[in-house]
Image (cartoon, rainbow over all chains, first blue to last red; front, side, top):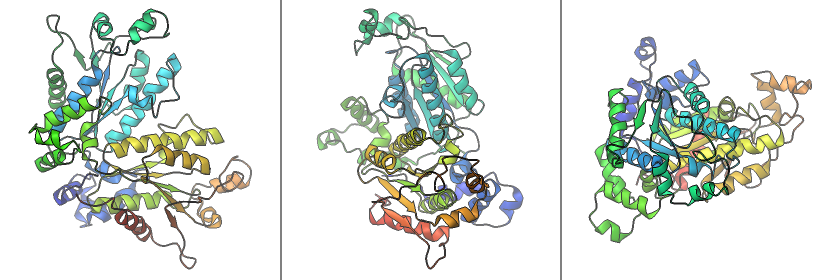
Length: 235
Length: 235
């Protein structure tokens, strides 16, 4: 089933087009308005989505080691946003490696391309009106900074899951750390490949007194940030 | 502004989870239900979107020569869907070549990768609950068939804009046909690169009595198809 918008939302849209008063005052219908918008900017294909965005939507990028709890937190955040009536979509690094990014490996240049594509897709989702939650291992600072630079200002929210490597390694649900320690997997982040900690992330998630807070509490931390920045306002 | 769903839609979601009667009858809250769904399938990250989809969403792929009117029709279709309260998103081949696909050229293998990525992104959008409208030049049958194969059955809707090359060439808004005829652009679809006409497209758009119907009329043709197939049903 696709989303069906109530009539008021369609009318609301015409209130948020950002068109000039002149255009608004001309008494055009919504359909004429959007056509007009389209004529004003022929690159503006997704007129309705653009027209509804009075501010850029955030893209939350969770980043850390394997088994740090990124995906769990992403799910929890998505649920939390959903309970507030906000549409979001999770771009999960692992899943994308079975689809869009299945041609990429784990060499430095492939990791660069991996996050570049995730950033580009996040941009499309934000453009479509969804809050995009990316969850992936992107160990190099320059790649994350490039991704930040490609997104509209303030809309890239870097969430660093600052979990001790030992904790992540102790989880090892897929046995990959074990294989990496045995030298059977090369270029493994945190083992024989570096993880460059962020210098300027928006949110840092940490243990409290040696205990990792529950996902819902961590999601709450992200939601509070989004609320403070006005991203979740009902307009 | 992001989408804000009215409370009824959130409740509705729990009616469409597709979970077993056993689970439904257990009296779990929506949040517990979705957590349950997540436990049932840990790959199912975007629980809410999945849960709302009682059928796969269509992906309309417009395809033809440059200047055939693909993007105009895509816009018109998006507007038409919007007037019916359906969210859609246009993936425009030209625009994507400034972002996600900016590393690709026009060689055969790059064209293959171009439509592969568009297909993968369309899949993500459909998964997120939006009708995806792709508008791109994809001249090789095998690439389009590969894209069809990667999407859920019946959800790839190939729309062939069967416009005479002469008509497209006469429009030539960017002067690219002229450059191609002069041999200044190589590998140009329809000039020195083939366009393999579809053998099994779902919709064929044609001129009527030598005149190209208005975009709204053409969009209506696509909407009728989607309605007939039950894609636009309000559930």
